[in-house]
Amino acid sequence: MHVDHLTKAMSIMLLAAIIFVVVIQPVISGSSADNDIVRHWYKSRGDCDNASEADWSTDSCLIYSPLLGILGVPFNSSMEDFTVFAFIIIGLITPLLLLYLTKNWISVLFYFTVTNYFYISMEGIYAQALVFAFALAIIAKKHWSIDILIVVLMNFAHGFGLELGLIFFVIKYLKPITNAMLSCSGTFGETPPKFFSETAFNLGTGAGVFNYGSLIYIFTKVFPFPFLVIAVWQNLQDKRKDLVLYLLVGLFAGFVVQQRAFSLVPLIGIIGLTSFYSKASRKGKAVLFLFAVVLGVYNLWSYLELKLCLGLIKGF
Image (tube, rainbow, N blue to C red; front, side, top):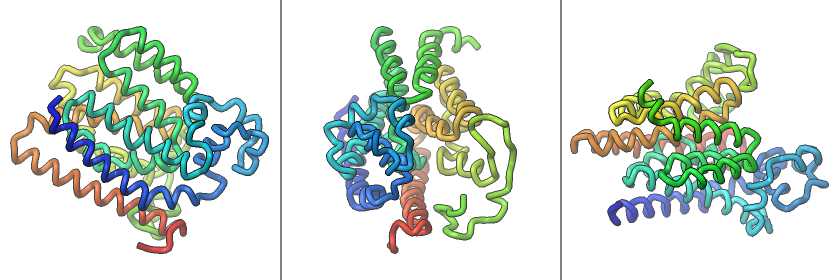
């Protein structure tokens, strides 16, 4: 990888760190007790006896997957420090894994702009973010024994970590076979369109009810549908059907297991999107870059608008 790619990627992550310190950390550190951030913090401190203060039962705290809490011990002296630990996973390690996989700095820009993964994960979805970082690590080329170790770690990182790890492991090592075969809205504030809350369908699974708003959200903010199509098309052109299967795993898990699983889609999709960018003409690259910057501004504005709507910030 050329040093220029690393320099540009580090510059983008530095900007993300500034946004985190100035905008995100003050908001999430002041969140109410009914928040996953607080629960992860209590788990890391080993303070399950007082988990009720985080609107959590002691039993649930004790049986919760321990790896995130163990890794976060050096940062659990305060809520603010613990959010720094989360930023290390979400704002540094994850984009660096994408950079390692793609060898192109634009993947880091896409990570912070074309999807709201960074913002939504920083809200407290730390264990899932850790598992998804492990999933990216499995895709990277390494010895099978290391991949087995990663799958074991995934088991202790999240309730669905083992299942996801095994799926990624199987897809990776069967690659030759696979190659052959909203009351508040970040956009509309307090008055989102009424049809957003209307039920679209209910599969009767752990993912719950899908309304039109949630479906629009998945294919606009989690990972815009045009970019999803581009990523899948490019993966097929690159004969990376394994990446297509990883994408399908994220979509399937989001619809059937838990809607948070949709966040896996942009992480995998960015790999194909980066490949498309690297092979595009100069004009095509400029257009894609412009779209990424516009979406980055929109996702930041949308994050702030949502916090303003919820009364967590007074204005901006």
